[in-house]
Length: 173
Image (tube, rainbow, N blue to C red; front, side, top):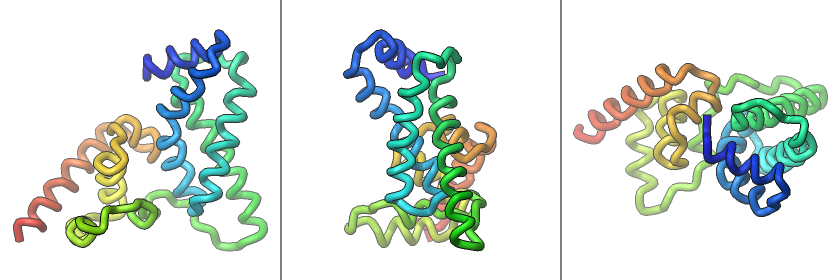
């Protein structure tokens, strides 16, 4: 549980409108990286992020649980799945499997390091690559990644360590 986030939400409930900016800063990347593999569209993911905050604010005073991050991510996931289902009726054969989604195609890497990073990442599986990038490039904690990828924390930590070992071995060679 994120006590800082809980404090911001308490301030927001008490009428401090600036607290929303703090809630947003604390959560927007987590929401984005949760919905992106479902929707596979940056613009649509950003739209769902906005809808998530609107829905959260709409339900703010009804909300009584203790884990606000999980609550916000649940709203985002549900909105993304609803959008996915709406689009699936229009476009057939959309893949909802997040384990095959590669975040590296959606990250912006600096030109000077891109070749080295892509080379090192090439030895990793999609899941290892996603966990490594979300942790190192997006600065998400393993707990946050576990929430986003819906994997146990231990699995995320172990997978990250395996990814680092594989990359070290590849870069030494």
